[in-house]
Image 1: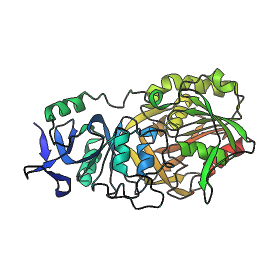
Image 2: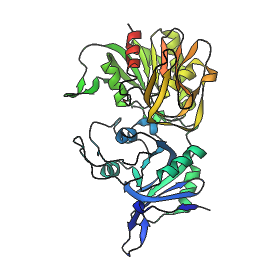
Image 3: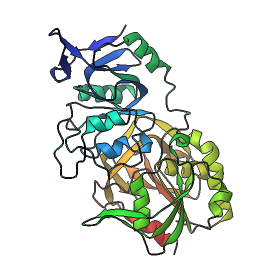
Image 4: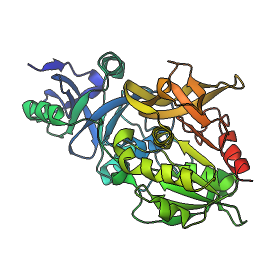
Length: 395
């Protein structure tokens, strides 16, 4: 039997006959139903539900390829208030399957806005649900683990709840799912755009730099911008690139990007490539997020699924060697099991929330990676040194 949570006043819409009705709902695989008010695209979507605690960056979050296969609950209530613009997308189209918020998005009020969030979602086929008790939903995620859910938006308020519950239960989950193939680039390309800087915005790198091959498991644009700004001449290759294809570019460094899905599934083809590059060359290797997990697997460690993952912009991470604490952005549902790190590999960073692994390195320092997203700026510049360290290791 489905448990139907009462819609909040914010969620209700007036029907022609004067009755109150909801125009969207969230249906969990265990039968719970949350009613709300829909915006964005009309239709239904099925995915894993996570929550994100960031107060800003909803456009970047929705276009972060690491959110493939997920619907994002935003714990901060005011989402959409600064609108959207042409510069903040992390990839060409939204990747997250949908979004859940407490308050309906308001008219944007920001000098950079070129549109509003509901229209942006509608044009890109993504569903938004407002008027939800996001605290209650977040507690459910923390207590039960990231649930499989179906969301639906129908302006008439007509929902087949049994069918939605069935679709949520049929969702296979992210364990064992290789999503990097779905979000990676189709072919190689060069990247020369640098980080945004006042007053010129995004500038192009013109000076020669260190030759770096970046493997795109779902790379965010701002990570590539940081590589370019740090002094790299970046060539991006698809997730399925072979070691021969990587080495054909004669790189001075190899970068492994962020991305979605189960690292063990993506590792079926990514790990052999990384191991062959490590065996045939002495170039430095730097990984972020899924790239961190790929590197750990290639070095002999294991990864495990987390209860509800880390998603937000307020995550304290400690660098063990220095004791420095960085405020970081994170987005991952799997983690490296630090108890399985082999000889010659050390843990470099840990989460101060739960002690989980946030970084590794080989003892010679040539190969290193972190779980968090150092290109993001909640710190605001706490973690950029990692890009500089990568470039310095190539000298």
